Image 1 (tube, rainbow, N blue to C red):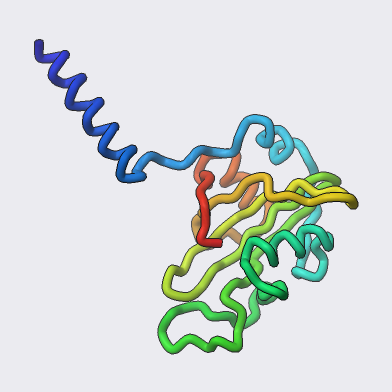
Image 2: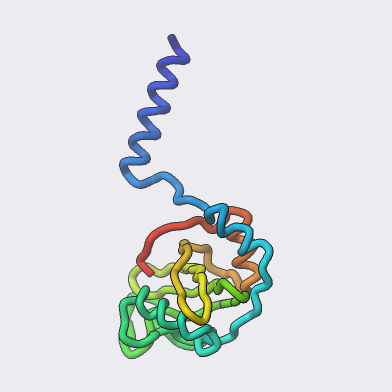
Length: 161
């Protein structure tokens, strides 16, 4: 009787959390995990060094006509206090590309300051967003980002991008 009651309470709590959107977002899908784990991601030090298709997809993801992404260490709209709208809302922190995939880790300022990571599948002929996630701040290299993804520290989620 007691076990049944605890089971009902547990299912109810899980259902309430799911309805409220409190269930943890999924980690990297298995079909992408092998790519992130095994491919060599060469460091890309500026947004201009990203493949053209990745820059185009980032611009589409951000909803802009141009890619408004400050370079690593450059000024950007870091906080909502006294925003300087002439500066980009996002700043590239680290990026790396293999022959098929690009990982991009960036900081998003404004009223909801956060760090995001996106994984693009790219070829010279097409590029598409394969996965995206909220990430912790303070990651310095694309290897730190890769380790965070593979350890499950960084999990998938929807925007804001």
